[in-house]
Image 1: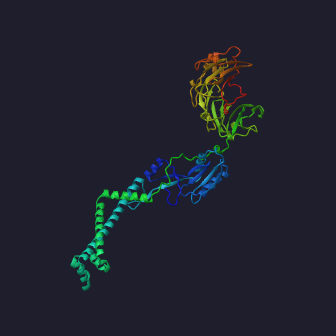
Image 2: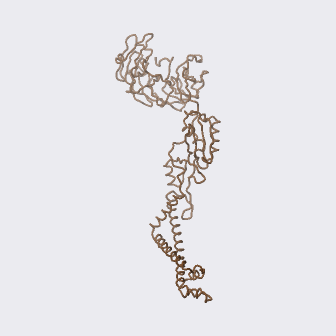
Length: 553
């Protein structure tokens, strides 16, 4: 990747399978990401992709800050100098800010992550341009390198042979120095005479005639003999290398290793597995605060800040009143349930303020004609809750299964003919909670919650046995449903009277799921509500249907 013009490091984050595809085909897209680290709760960027300007990155980040798309960033600085060519500092607003989420957003929206097109279009051994994969490219390069080294060795061998040939002539002249001097002094054309007298070639004779007198000393003869011996050994080595493919390959490998040791440096763009960059959504950058969603009986909704909201002091339109509320965070979705068992979801922060009446949900959601909204929920997606119909069927699900982006909602609870949904009940502990179900005829059944199935949608299993014909005629219905945590006891309210069922008394109403249940004592069969008394925790997101009459009553 980057060469001498790019002194800082970056990371190649292209998946290895995509890199393998580039190697196989010779073309593809390469993604390179900036390098950063955390120092004293600040984000320090120390490496940029090739061709990326630090000033340009700062401009892009500053533009997002001005557009209020990065409220979690307080400041940014350029501290680059000669010691650190790249040092960009991003200062979060607090140490609670998710720094990796900020960087994931910046990688997706700025030049801190860039794509580069790879196209290995090269001129091959045939002299024509062609896109070649890595294997073909290396194979052709090795053929080219082998031919280059062979030509270099052949050129050197030719030079060594020519030099040895001249040295042989020079040594002949030293052995017959007096005769050579006589011929040079007496002959008008000494060159042909020397060639004929000593069987010399033209090059040898020319070299002898070009030799200066000072080079005819005895010491020079020794040097010539030493040089001739060295060239002889070099010639033998060259001839062996050129005559053996294995020796030639070893020479090429040794030369490459020496070059790598002399000129190689650590990889500046390591291949690193990183998650994909993800830009922050509007929900991610809005302030996260406690909120309460209030739903009225006519389906009007509004949003109040905080959890301590007195719903009785809120104003409602004439003929309308409080139905339900849900407490959560402003970055959570508000989930609504209707009377046909469908679920809907809206971002909580988009709901109107509680200073007014709010707005009707039907303006943003498509509610079937003749139906109404019955509950509102907020909480973490993994939270479990119990959904049931007044026909006596139900199942356990998670809040995440209720979320949908469709205006028409999502089919959730399948209702038997003529039945209606009951308000959902939060689950504290799936393994230890018990279900307490009461009918309008005064039957009470208690059984372990774990015997109900965990589903994403559907009708569910039978909670308490109610004859289908009586349920369709709405003569006998399941009207109250609560969950009993471990060590809690149940209080049955009937008018102004109440019956407290301590753990020992609760056992009298325990049976298998799907049974008819046991009749409550006389005077307590017109159950107004079931109250759980004990160590059940208060959950902020728990739905509050205070003031809502029991469905099917």
